[in-house]
Length: 231
Image (cartoon, rainbow, N blue to C red; front, side, top):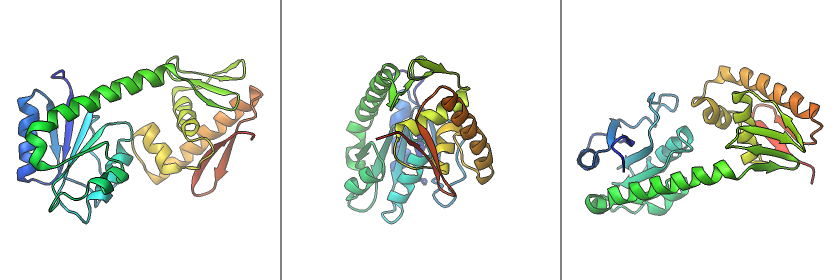
């Protein structure tokens, strides 16, 4: 693991969080620690970590916090240290979106190896995604080349339009909420951003239709958008 690898440690000040930070710094991880912010989902640190480690010690709020962290950083590996009494939340935390769960008793021996394993899987996944195009009907998105085709015809999209269409194509046939799209594309959610999203969706629709593509972006008012293809 390179010393440039950054880890965001999220958790209230505690013995477990202090021990986690010490282990990471001893193993040359760049580490930033912040307090949990489950009470304010719009407040998030202006950092882009390689990995997140969440220290959860409240059994009543742990799964809520993990869902929030997953929403804020959907593409970043998330390891959760289950510091709740008895460490019995493994299954609920995995269901909430954790990529791995570790008990404090095993942290000294397993924290660093598990983070390295997550980083390897992340790197392999990114390599695979860069070479395997997304498809929705006759629509093809080449993530590596950052290009879109409708049948044999290339569709010229701006970087933002590309990211929006990519997000919808990853969930073809499912309504993707405004909030989820905005966080995936811009990294944050503010209600006033919905209008900008509508404008981008309109541009994408026009460009795809001009290319003769039958794929449709369906609007669900007040909810989100869905990429639909003919059955």
